[in-house]
Image (cartoon, rainbow, N blue to C red; front, top):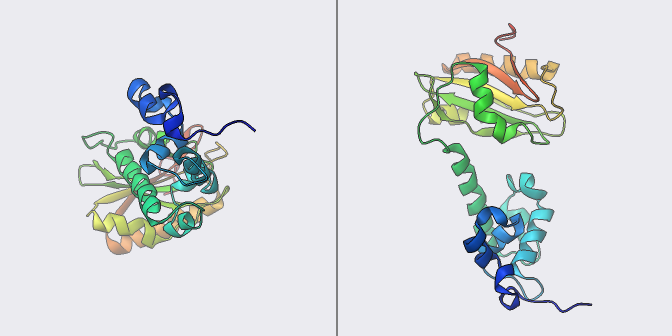
Length: 227
């Protein structure tokens, strides 16, 4: 069995911090980036090895999107301090993803919705249901993921959709979700959920403008007379 090195014993060009400074963060693996946040590992694992374990046991980056403190604390080597680092980093990443453009994009067509969300949800392996919150000028206030489903479907409750809309004083909402299969035709469940959400929106006074399904292309339920 070969000799095992700690990070400090590695040559400088193999250490994550040195590589980040010389080659940029894009050159580092996910485990190396998280390892830098950890700073130190355990007696058995370097920070990078521990980070790799966390990522794998959380279900890769997709799973980390919704990982809980309880799940993290069950991983050997992860205590409250490292769990807080992970949760803070995940939440910070979510917030960064919502403010890539310092201005507020304006939604005037389903293509605009596709352009706003494709990079976030089109290639996810589970259905991500997003509520695009708009002000009276159809400017995007925010576009939170309100539900993450299974490989084939998503469960959405009106409370999850309209709670952020009410909090943000949104004038209207555009619903959107991805189809991991790539096909964009709405299922019977998509139609049922849309009808339920439209009915709930009328009660609270927030208009649902459209439901856009994103896959290899995009599909507007409004343009097809389904809303």
